[in-house]
Image 1: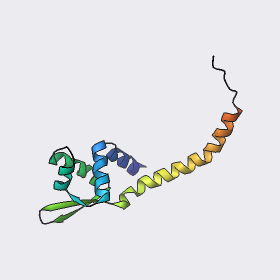
Image 2: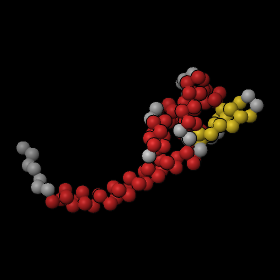
Image 3: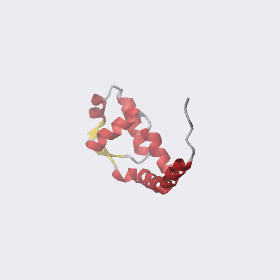
Image 4: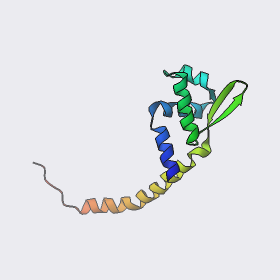
Length: 109
């Protein structure tokens, strides 16, 4: 659960989410990412650090350039959390529907 919370926290920032989606589509350097977003290079680096700490991106050094790409394994805690909750709601939904059908309808005047 703790890992899923960290992933949610990391992806809660709209710019960070956009950076993650960008490196999920294609490996990019900090310089390339800075050109794509209307934020400074230090801000992009901070976003990448948060994504790296939450396990969502990997970095690769090539000379002086550092390249980032999404790490599919980093999403596993989140997908596990969603699966557990999906099973819970699929089990509860028919009971909720039945209960709502049994409830008396209020008249709106």
